Amino acid sequence: MSASSMGFVARGLFSNAYVLLTLTMLSWAGNAVAGRIAVGEVSPLTLTTLRWIGVAILVLLFARRQIAKDWPVLRQHLPFMAALGALGFTVFNALFYMAAQTTVAINLGIIQGSIPVFVMMGAYLVYRTPVSLVQAAGVAITIVGVAIVALHGDLAQLESLQFADGDLLMVAACALYAGYTVALRRRPAVSGLAMFSVLAMAAMVTSLPLMAIEAAMGSLIWPTATGWAVLLYVVLFPSFLAQVFFLRAVDLVGPGRAGLFVNLVPIFAATLGVLVLDEQFQGFHALALAFVLGGIWLAERRRKV
Image (cartoon, rainbow, N blue to C red):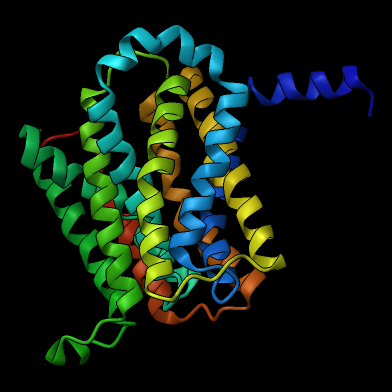
């Protein structure tokens, strides 16, 4: 393909919000598969640290002009953005990859799909954002779906409160990411790319102690050949390209319509888990997916009843 043809394809891609959003959600869903493949190939906290080192290098290469342009505003909010980077990028991903050690990609994706409901709950608690009865019902239904995943469809586990460690870690990760999302309402008035770049660099810095702790505990696994391949994927796709695609899509269709596509993440993660990892999609997965997606659909409705 000639350079002019490639340029035409690239321009076409960046003018189609729905293609960009689909690729974004596919990349984020692929992170669940990558987390599972990483087990035994690179330790979770090391993967988190190396991921954000890689992303920081990329943003310095491709976004330094935008960072320089917005730096006078960014500099005034560095402590706040450092906290956001630590919460939404470092801690979320550390818990995500730790969860992947003991649960399947299908579970990771379904639980991750509940983030919009956690965000709604956080917005109500912090900002008292109004929630209708229909939306409240959606929240409850989504929570039931997450519980079905955590219990693996076995309600008898409630008697002994036995939950898979990985599923609980993923629930905690989603709750923290929701906190990060709610806090973004206070973001400074800078471009999305500059904001992401500073958050990524903050994530790199705040993830270094986690890798040091992992090393001190004797559980650090330096990447094998497969581990490096996983790292390359998570740096390029869910971390960098997906963020660029999503920011561009938001510019094209707005945050509301773009946000709806997050509902594709659990569907894509379940599909990839079956196709790539040969995981078993069981009846309780289908039930949980129906509850989570149905609950989100209700929760995103604006009509009061």
